[in-house]
Length: 299
Image: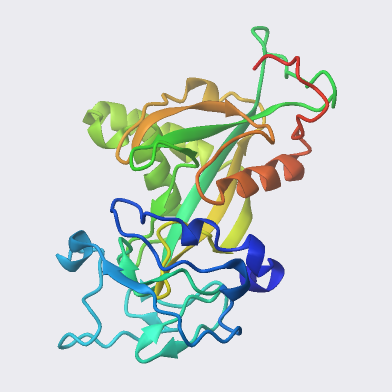
């Protein structure tokens, strides 16, 4: 579990950032030593904030707690809504779920739709970098092959990230992964019917390739609050020969403003915990990762 494996001073860095995304709201300051709920802090007074967009009750958002006919079953499968955490059982106090890792300086839901865990999926699509002759490119120092992944630049913060999005109630993991990748990295939602049919064939082949789950659990995300938090499953789909992805039409769509292949190095600056996921992929695939002690390589 994330909360058990990472010390308080290293956890919740993003989840304590101010101002809160998409707002001017400043969180109550939470020092490193008081992140954990196990540390007594009687004076703790988090800022209450739920965005007006969430309060407007879009289809993906819960009602406010206490509203008539809304009795969420926390730590359970609640109809089509998954309210179980990948981190295990979480505490519910005064009717509100408690962030399993610790304090964030903010109560309410912020811009997250669900009370408690908000489940996302992130497809990490990779291939080996190749030269004009089709040969894999190795790093001159490590002598390991250089791996590439499909990255998108987020519209909300301008940071590079793994494409992905929230699971719809009752939707399967495989459908969400393919849908979110297509929407953000290929602009599938704005293609013609014929273009979508051709793209679907490519995506079907791609998402039938070698795959494994990189991470499954809590995410240190700037949208997190004391009562609502992000959890994700990051899945790597690897095109070993590059035959499928060389024809993949990358084009930003939905929540992205740019999409491209990015070489994987330890110097990447990525959104939230995505850097760690990419590191896991590089290590799993035996690809180059560290850039230290070498400064002449041109990317």
